[in-house]
Length: 61
Image (cartoon, rainbow, N blue to C red; front, side, top):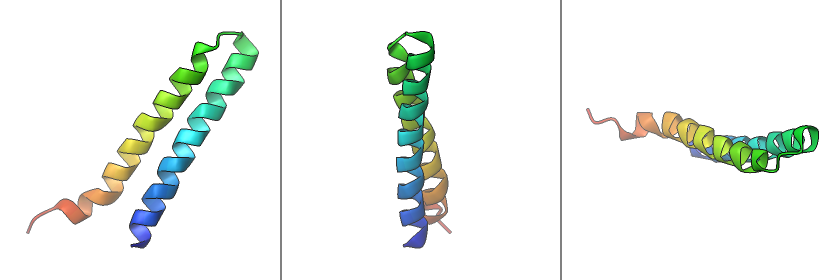
């Protein structure tokens, strides 16, 4: 259960972090598409983190 909560927290952190990085790049470069790139990057990284955390539960013996 703790592993799943940690995976959820990590997913949320990567998505929010990607969004904030996108906002920062938008403000510094003026290109608003950085927000979408940061958000999608955070989503992809979050999915990888969740899969890595849940993978031990999915292995069959």
